[in-house]
Length: 475
Image (cartoon, rainbow, N blue to C red; front, top):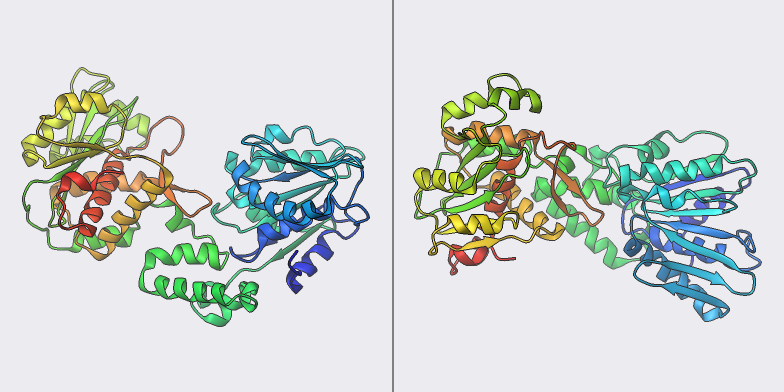
């Protein structure tokens, strides 16, 4: 395998020293974290190594089987040429067995229930714990800590990864506040005040010393982040190991929304693209109309049962908030109905904006929507994978910050109220998508969801200017 770098040798020496049962290495992406985890896996399964415990089963913990497979491949590349090992690599299970001694390693994902049986387990090697998704990885972390606390337990846990995408929780507490005779923490984090200075970037990314390509990539990303504030948060999180909670959880920053409202309101040019987010359960149905000039308007339809006053109490918003939206003309109520029909929203958009050139929507209640729309109006469902959602959100952020997105006074209250509660979730690849706040669907982010769809289609139309609206929404 590749020779260890000095910082890796220092960490392994301290993490495996007598008396240490918890060790954490935190540093930016691209600095060999998964490779180092694979190196430890290899040592755990190598007879005569100081980490080898014959006849035992260690575990490799990762956010998913796919993430664990990266570490697994590094370990397999080192072990396989020696012979004497059996490798299990299926869609649902990954493991390694040293056949002569029956010393094993199995992979578990970020689900605490799979780690409840860690009895007699000597090593838990944990890759990218910041990306563990079940309760922020708390369940799996608790299972590991519980196993270490059992009488006579030999378990030692080694956590290797970047702090992002999680912005708080047990991982941050361990790295920032980890103390005690049995805990060792080594962290490389940048100084936010010096975030774009090359000496500081180089200090926290030690592998630039051996990779010209890595150095070039960091400089390119630094320069892009200087030009575009939306890229700065990602650079801070993944290249300086400084997670930025504001940008990672907000759909639009206050500054970007203020840029939208400060622009002169553009005229309606031609027929609009209309993005639809239909209701389910307690939600509202929402529509956003966007014209080629960048003008954006919004409408929503709320159920009539329960009453608006009861909905305000349920959603914990100030009394009169929803009534003010009705008075502004941006919110309509489906009187006497618990679930508003799609036709009511479509009728509202026709009355307000005329016939649309294209309707883009998600796939929820697609058939009902198509039944309400004229046969001459294309309806394009948008695939809602992480990558597509991230592209649409990036598009919204771009047209909000740089233009031409503008909004008339009549729609600002409704859009601003939805943006205030819209929350985005990050995956371990840096993608984002809208995420419901809480478990009872009490955040009115429906307009924000439609706005994301409209902005994504708008940006794709700019990239393909010769094509009509009807083609830009396709996944």
